[in-house]
Length: 161
Image (tube, rainbow, N blue to C red; front, side):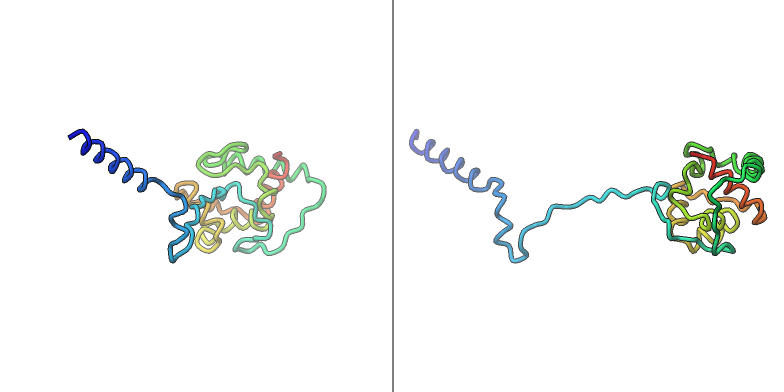
């Protein structure tokens, strides 16, 4: 009885050991080695840099002067405070993204087109679509600003560092 119990124990242990995790077992597979699953960390749209995208809208080319026009920026601040602060905070994420440092991530044309043409931008511009998803599907409202007013808001954004 003892011999058969020892024999059964040895067989059980040998079976467990032989079924253990052999890391090389996939090498003999006809499909080759298993590759480890790579999890790519996706950069949120609000932090993504896209300095070649001009967006979709009336502004196709815009050259910004080296110096900030302080009068235009002050006008832009007034417009921003009146029309934009319900959804945007200058330095933190709110209902919409923060404009601080926006020109380090977006072209001036893209920013202007987003202000002037948000409905078409979220339908046709891939980055605007991604922003819409990042911000829980809350579309940017078209405030009906003129190009001059939108340009003033853009100038104000240039003062935000």
